[in-house]
Length: 395
Image 1 (tube, one colour):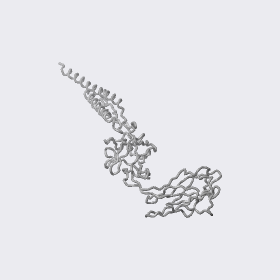
Image 2: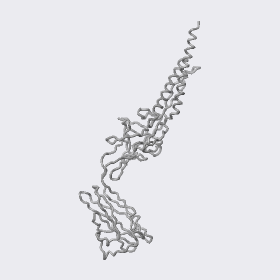
Image 3: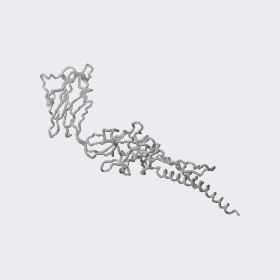
Image 4: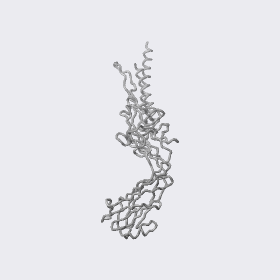
């Protein structure tokens, strides 16, 4: 019986050495989770137990340290959750967020597993799919809305429109002009000029011209005694323009919210318009919400997809699949999908990776303990052998 007890101890100690050695070997593996051995005694009703056995090898899913890399496609997950990958036809889960982009635009890890997420604008209501960055350019968008705010000089002289008709080529027929840009449906840039004419106390006429073609109907801006815009008494102009060249007709609504009339020089405080020309993709970035954002040469950006995260009721029930990934099992339960920073899921940090959660100092201590345990069991076998030899040699 003593031999079987010692042999069970040797087998258990050998397994413990394997686990400790694997932890040490992966102490620098990104996203690796260390393991520990649980032992149980073997007891069959005899007065003395039958030795020991390995009851389970459990993985420690506590967070590793986030290490800054400065690389945009490195992702660290701070908190609960796993990245969801497609590896061939199998769905696997990993904490390794070190990614590269293939020539086809897919985001992959070093093992060729493709990161999955939700299509842009769908959210968690969609079905996760392999995220792909399209290589095409962003289409142009025509200007339909312009938001501008100015300060109009309250000391300007009133221009009598009855005697001085508006003429964009005559600077004496208006008080102030400012020029910006607008884009047609083909992304062609056009010059848009706004003309302001003081027509009375706290009253201004505003006209818009695109490429020198003024709108037929002007708008009016009314101000109160404090120099603030009275929107209820104002009429903002709308401009329609046929750019030619095959582009669609333009219809531009202009908002002058925030415009003032103070006794200071004319000044443009802000000018924003929603049109832009076409632009080629120049790079991607990933924000803390997991949105994959395409950045384009036209200084625009758009969300291309959102990274899907997964969590499990019993993460320790996951089965290791190699390549620093796990697959779901009956013990782990089905994956719960969601977005970074929402509910039970941790937050994403671009430019970082999660290091292994193995504490190398503790593992070296565990290695010494496992070695002593193994040596002690071998000593037990040696003593048992000497005792049997003594019994055999009795005369």
